[in-house]
Image (cartoon, rainbow, N blue to C red; front, side):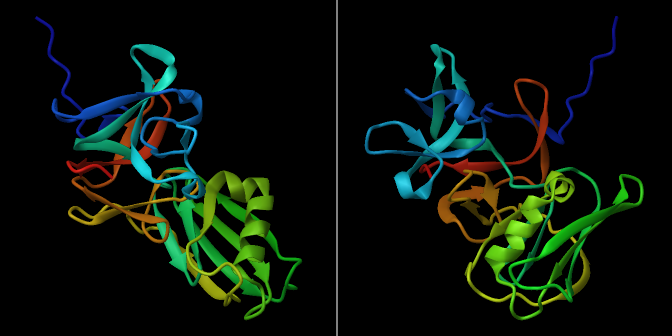
Length: 239
């Protein structure tokens, strides 16, 4: 007799539901644009969107509809629904929040000495030692928009972190010493916020929903076996 394989409680299948009483709808939008675990909105033409400019939140994508693979299934209400997090860890500094795109150690520093509007980013390190992202900027002059643009423009940096403006885009940012990006997004019982552009769950800014976290950080497994940072939420009354 073979020995059964234990379930890995640290992993969750994206698009799965933890309870049988979940309410779903089938939406006429391509699921390729609305991956499982993203909070979605309905536009005036009934199509789905991830942007807050297009409409109100209606639920969390469950990926392809079983009845039609060209349509997207949306969980409108339910418990233990997996959502995709913006990163494996985060750090907020002034008007910017940094998310790690990979499950590796990453630190960041803003170094004075650059010129506002001509900021430049670089990264050093490796998977074993961890990485340090450095941004050369002008202390008290470089804005959140300018700093984000420089970090996004460097392909090596952009492969490690996602930079999101979570407060005022035009505010000047301060230089700061190397700091670890190690904040954990889910806190059980906390309200869930979602990005107004990606539909991923974020710790600050975006839209505060009516859902709450019921798990800590999990590894979400997509249909193609790729892995994303995730957490389970209860949304009995919808988003």
